[in-house]
Length: 166
Image (cartoon, rainbow, N blue to C red; front, side, top):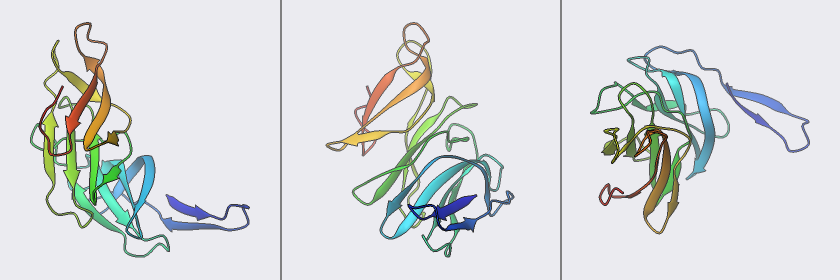
């Protein structure tokens, strides 16, 4: 569920109860973020292929919508296991398992979904990104569960435009 509670705990409201299926998410993971008067988050299930979604909802519980339904494969990714971040009016996130993982961006209205990086695993790349990105000066930073010289994960950086992965 997505819920709202007052700081003193006096009020608790369910804003959205996930039902799964092609037009909803299931198994929310990570935290919500606020941008432009809306809340954004991800689920690791639900959507058209049951591989997770990016969603938006207003703080009063109205306006729920799926912005992107993950389809799987190296061209889209699946199973996000972290939180979105917002930078310069764009949402950024990662997908994790099965297809080695991706870093993506999407506009808050759901348009312009773009893969910035698809992980290849091995000694020079990671796989299975986990957690959330952070942003500093137009550069995104994150971590992977696997990959690198010892296959124990990497810390990576990538520009918010998708270039300069290291």
